[in-house]
Length: 115
Length: 113
Figure 1: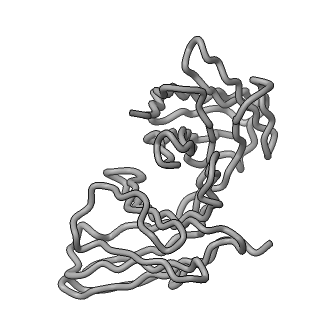
Figure 2 (figure 1 turned 90 degrees about the vertical axis):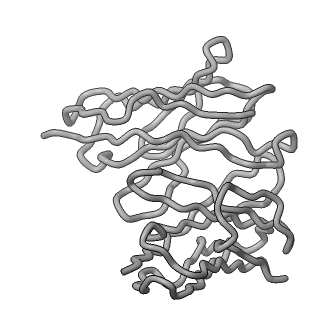
């Protein structure tokens, strides 16, 4: 069965500092991986995705993520955080025929940005 | 391309009532998934409809049901509302095929009094 673990429930970071959010997945084959961001009371917006190929993927809003098969991880990074990056972030895995195309989401990491 | 739309955006109901939420997916998408999001339980999968058929189902009671129409629009119904049904209900639109990248709507905020 597929699953996602986001070990950090809450992260506080200073504006301008770097950010890294952890995501570990459990999946039997090569996974499809996603990161989403959610502002309060809003829907989820896709930040980036990994399907195959280059293990370092670039997304919107200056985010990037690195797929590491050996560590079953897909960590999200941003070199310099802006106050508008305060939100909740979700990692997801799945979407393949072997699991009926279903996506499994992590519990989310809330990011607070301090001035 | 227009995004995913959900109506209504906000809803207030009382216990025992029923409610219907609507989701219009992105044009060309054949799959609609529904999620319930609460502060305590996080994001929980309700069900997915693909080409008018329920393809996946989460662990929710039978009070939660859905359907999908031939134009891919989907509705979700909750009968006999309970206080614990208060949540943000999100729908996600996708092609329904691998990698099944999902695009979310803004959600419907349901409050049960």
